[in-house]
Image (cartoon, rainbow, N blue to C red; front, top):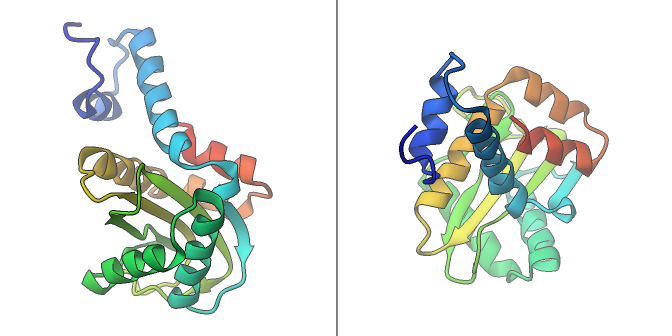
Length: 184
């Protein structure tokens, strides 16, 4: 395998769609660690909230902004405004009870995430018309490009798996949620 030292998105996508075992197991393990660290680095246990009681998307964003102000020292109003402004462009609801609200802001110095599972589903204008309970919030610096898209891609891949969604709904701890989101 030439150019194994580079860890580009191309390798990750190539491995995901390749079904044979012709790749070096060391390279595969390394790519898995990159995936784990990509989401794991931006999702500390303190950014995971289970069974949050909110009645609307607006209240969800207010609670998320408060969480990220307390845990990541991001200004509450900036987080709320960033999420709300992005949502006005189009729903970040994916369907199947999942949403990934995301945005860029100058106050964000490095990518940060938060996972919230709501006690009751919240209307989110998802494509399937169903409310959501599984929400991953992603905020990145204003000039971020590749990392932002790669994280969104990884998250969408995890959430597209019914078994992962069901396990997230049944999870009883932040540790369990983090493991589900970071393992392949």
